[in-house]
Figure (cartoon, rainbow, N blue to C red):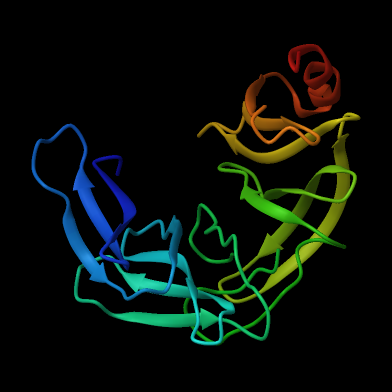
Length: 212
């Protein structure tokens, strides 16, 4: 609803999840006290009832967890197998989440990307998912019901430029503007943001013009 912000805080080697009201001088409220294991907050369900986060497991793997936003401390594993699971994002309709899986009901792992992918992002208005693939930004068209996810098609939106790494990106609520975080290869302190506007078919052209 735009009234609150959730964030992680580490105090005395213990990680916690906090809730704070925007434009207020009140202290942030602790809604979940963890331990020394790392917590990374990634997303919130559209109904505001659950936070989706990544937690380091006892075996040092990373698991995707669902935490109650009410402050009752209820937390459960959505999924986590051997290795590192991460970067979960909740869709605008709250039903499906490079793999997609229902955040309620029976666990299913349904592929979104055709190959390697990172930083998935759901289009706020259309049934499209964007992610960073091996050669550039990809767009996946999909169809879905409550517990089913079907890929309808995939295309390369634009290729990466030589010497530039795309490390993250965001989209405005109308689905018309990308804000892309870029970094020069081998220069970790060279982060800069690029604003991309216009139809998605013009992304490659505009990226080349705006990235200097």
